[in-house]
Length: 531
Image (tube, rainbow, N blue to C red; front, side, top):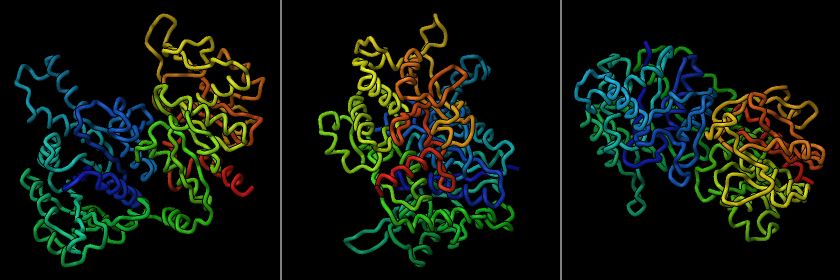
């Protein structure tokens, strides 16, 4: 029988429900359980694909092409597994399914209501994720008390009738704030948050207290009393220098052991965390520091490039190096001397993005890296900018640019493909695609294999009309998606390390297994720093 763990949050958002869920996932998986993690988002958007990074941070793409909340990225990095679109449940998805079913007569003419039809659909989705799994960890987005989250809370309350209360555990993450004026930690917000959850009909089994500082025993006793849980069921998750320390912190408090006991599961096998601890040891003992200039469009948004930040961290830790990411607005760079903003960089990274805003700044960063021999990695739009810069300044194709924009160009170097010669429907690559690597190239050496699988999220492609011209002038095409004959990797053979990739390699980086492309990139930056 599948067991279900539901992680809710109270008081304020951004408490770390996702990290709590991911940390528990690590601990349970490494005890030998077959787990899956689900994110339930109350927003009405069907998915995160059309949401601005300014609103919701990074869009994370799963292997099957689902555009999801960034928490799914944390899940994958922690449990080191690829998860699918079904692991993301939004209100938009739920209502779309219910309305479509009603329109086709699926409800036999009955009145369709939030209860039972919406809540049943939510429960069905939870159970589908749990098929053939020992444990499902499900995080409910938002905060207890949010009106849009009520159907999800009602659904997880009702689920106990379907699967049995003994197969469900409710974990509530809440804030214990420190009031500087009085020098005290306050439990009242936690009390109110738990009471709100209980009014809905859910009694938490475990309470996780987020705090800036240690929650003393007397306060944990107070929280236990008012929350109607035992004192051993109150845990603390203090602010940490790295999110990767949280699984160890919770394990030391017997968090995963208590979870298993409450679910009636074996606690015999201790989690194997040797590689995780090794990562943390390397994290603590990094000696050198390098500067990576990240030239992007959303650099003022903390979570817009979170997978990139994590991928650089993973590579840096394994190479004993602190990565100082210098965020540079591509628009600012357009009107600023490149030396002023990029002069102290040991490496330059231009990430993906949509639209032409800031593109000239990205192209300028590519030119500076090429001319000064600085290690360079272009991703998505960053690769396209790298190609445009090369075409303009090496091949003398002065108006090389994107097609299908308001700017007319005789050199549509980056264009939109169509699914056939007649259809106006644009071809989009979304999710995992195979890429064949060319022998003798840097990409082939870095990956040490003939074929790779990476994730994509884009419509624009390199125009193969210019492929031969590029290759004969020093820009080798080192990776091809044979499925549709599109360019995935380009590299400048006259540069120490300048590579552009159409895909998004950061999605596959893990703390215990950094992505080879980022490891090679950081290694070259270290060489530059030492030169």
